[in-house]
Length: 99
Image (cartoon, rainbow, N blue to C red):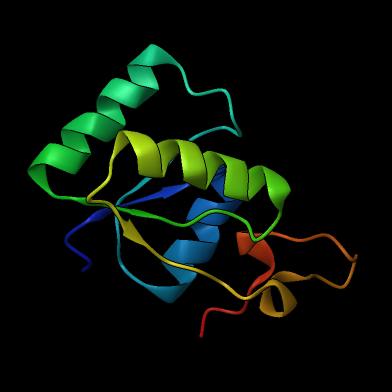
């Protein structure tokens, strides 16, 4: 079990993370970071720490940048862009293999 809470963009990303590791996750729902969600992320950040895992695209990088500024001691996990491309050509954490 990973101690930190992993922050991902969506529900499909949670499923992908859980295929690879045992971890608690929070989803941003894209860039719509509500005050309630930010409070949840902050609580996790203070209690257990967080790891930010966003898609290797411009939207994911924008979310990562915002969260990095707000939570400077957060951990970061990255999936190379080439490993996150599905057969449909779309990019996302959910497209990566569990390994």
